[in-house]
Image (cartoon, rainbow, N blue to C red; front, top):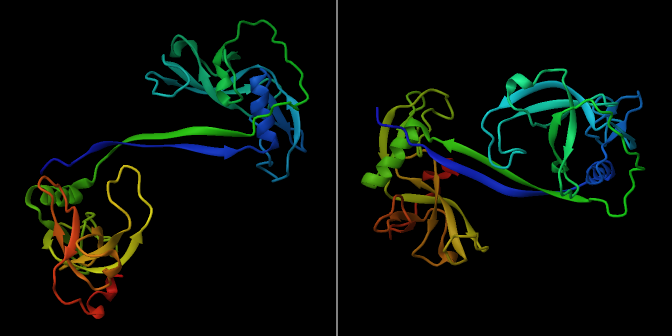
Length: 314
């Protein structure tokens, strides 16, 4: 069997959110080396604090102080830290129930090895040298040396409260299109052919193939060449220029039902003024010299397809 394609992918974006009064107080307090929890009506203290009781849904606002020392309730060793994690040397992820709290806080524990970590061990907060009002103001936890930790008292009101945070969301993963789409991609790249797969039950041909029929749910393996020409089923006019895309606006992006296919794929329409693109327009692929897939589709010059020939593919 030919080798299935795979490639590393990264999805990354800054996630900006505003804070309510409870979490604003919590993060601002960390900047002052203070840990705040929130009291529920039945006397539980939640850390990190939340604005609504997860059990009763009551609104919560009674902020209380908890300790800067606590007890490990569970843990897992991380032998190979990744970019952006709290420590760049091996550490333990721990859930720590701070003194006077009833819930546990997730953070990193700086320890020499997994043998030095156990459930029930006493730990304390190591504060970051520079604090800005974020969870990273807790640099990590470290084993408690046994000295009594003074718990500073604060009213939970601040002259310069943190009102919002920006979290850098990032997902690194390896994507594989699978057997069916690997064959589709290689046929496009090496032979400039569009290859779909036919469902053995409903006999529909799907392009790009998924390896299984989305309607019947049965596996597909029979390859069917489709196109290269096709019919515009629906389209949109793009008026906003995309970053890193060297295409002048306005342009047209369309769903194109290739001849012999029972599923429309999408592609850009060129070679015709954008305001002349229409449903039923017959188009063919245009390749660049070293293109791995069609650069765009252009009119073939044929008469428009009758609506009844593509209405099921809208």
